[in-house]
Image (tube, rainbow, N blue to C red; front, side):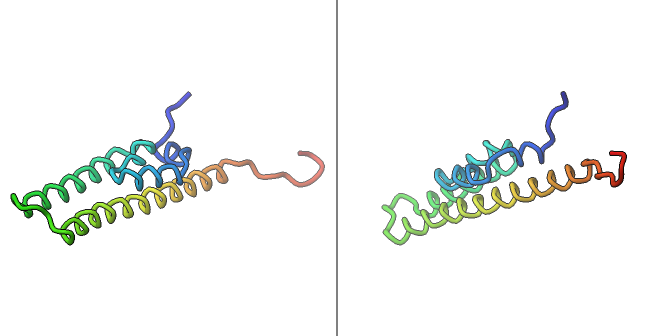
Length: 114
């Protein structure tokens, strides 16, 4: 038995589960579900960079309500982008696998001998 391809792994996952896992914690957990390591590490790097940027810009002072909203909005934006990207990757992989299966499917013969 051969190992499944990258597209087969993504297509075999549920798109809504990957999207939900990317949205809820906002840290790219849906990418782990889809076994997509590069987007996962990019998401972790983006969230860490956003957190570090806020930490260094804030300094030692207490963050204001506006700064808190900006920080949460940035993490929310990262999670929304990952939700959309994971869902698009699932749809694209499913479509590709479907077209590959249609190419392999034998044509129906007409006539007496089938």
